[in-house]
Length: 177
Image (tube, rainbow, N blue to C red; front, top):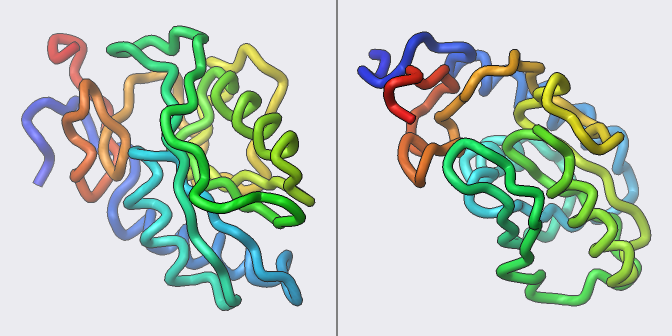
């Protein structure tokens, strides 16, 4: 059932599960013979990462980073790293898990940071891509779904920390933000 604060459901729980299976298969093939470090960007990536890693048939390690650049509905451009990786990234093949690529500022900052820490490679898998909002020339290597320039919540994405637990992605009604 759709949450009362939503205009519509964009991507169903079943569509997300199916796409995670496809992405997992592709990532498994692309990383054959490697042991990637899967890094989730807190908090939004958690549901996506949990679903995705079930479909990656490799020995993996996982870690998390907490970065922020949002206040309300706007990316403010000031990207802060609130929690660094637990271990060194030296020589690691990193697969960065993101909930959405929007302006690209956060992604650019985190990728640069990981290379400064000595990562061997950094690729990005994002549940959602919103290319209309991009201000930095950057793209994810693996994308679940391209979404229109609307305010989306659910499956990890939030508005003021709400709606993350919805099992689907929907468009928030304007009167709610």
